[in-house]
Length: 132
Image (cartoon, rainbow, N blue to C red; front, side):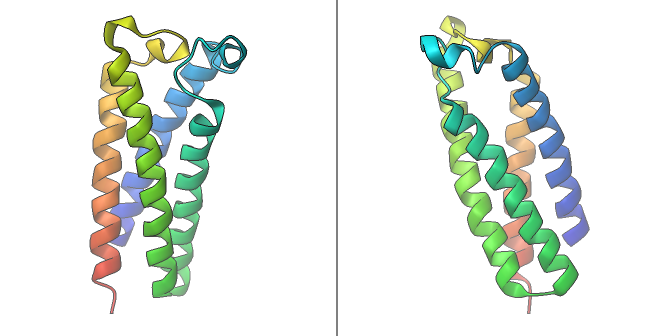
């Protein structure tokens, strides 16, 4: 189950980096000055930094077998997931009145990122819970 968890995590990271690319190429950083975007830069960048940090802890757990690293990965991932949920509700709340770079996000990519993210979260919790 540990490797399935890593595979789901990597897939989710790829989708997330695609969304980040769309936001950046759509002028998301430039829109911070004019307050056009609903996503503050700290929110946009904290989410992937925390998720990748959690993945590093998970890989550290896989390499060393330390249970503490598995639970640390879960805790950091939980914070990242909360930030992701915040972005999702802001994006969803804008609806057809979306403004800024986030209006370029394809619905399928956002939904896939969310579904694979929740799956990864559950897999990490189950795997960390089953470690003896």
